[in-house]
Image (tube, rainbow, N blue to C red; front, top):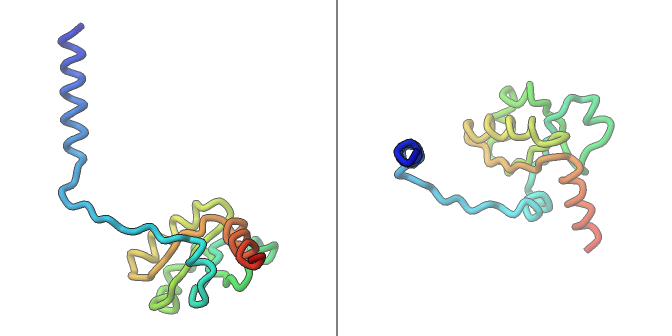
Length: 123
């Protein structure tokens, strides 16, 4: 039993060390509240038009996830916050935007972004 445990521990250690990378980059996590409320931000709701029409954050534009790739050029050079219902589509949009050089931030859900806006307006 000791040999099996030792073997398992050694295999686990080797597997974990194999996953390490030598080049880790430290990226400061942006304060999403500051980004959402900044005057130069473009808020992008990536849900389908029917969901967008039912409610979204103030001043948000609708670019459905399926159309994000076709709108890269219009978003380049802008600070973009993407969001959807629960964050799944926003994560996918983030990947596409970042791979194409767009400064993108994850607002997660439209209710989160709207809540940040509402909180800022109370101050």
